[in-house]
Length: 131
Image (cartoon, rainbow, N blue to C red; front, side, top):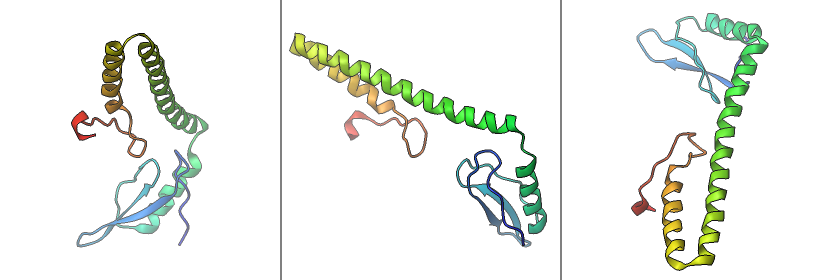
């Protein structure tokens, strides 16, 4: 049996999975980006199909996948810069008076509940009471 090639989009590790039925069906998924094939009965044909796609992937497809990852990271960086601006505002408010400081603290605390979870890459919304 031929070895699986890495994912054609992100170069992540690919794994074969089995869909249990009367006659098992096989599929392949990338562990990193979750790109998956349809399920089929012939495991050898599935592997040949996956490996063939990996060889035929164009440079433009690789560029598009990398650009998508770059845009996601850029969004995270912009969010962090906004939080740094908020910290500067908080520092300025602390120098002026106590009530402005408390108001700025509250507003920044509310924003932090809408930061991306780095493990799931999804927007996380938590209630301030749970923190």
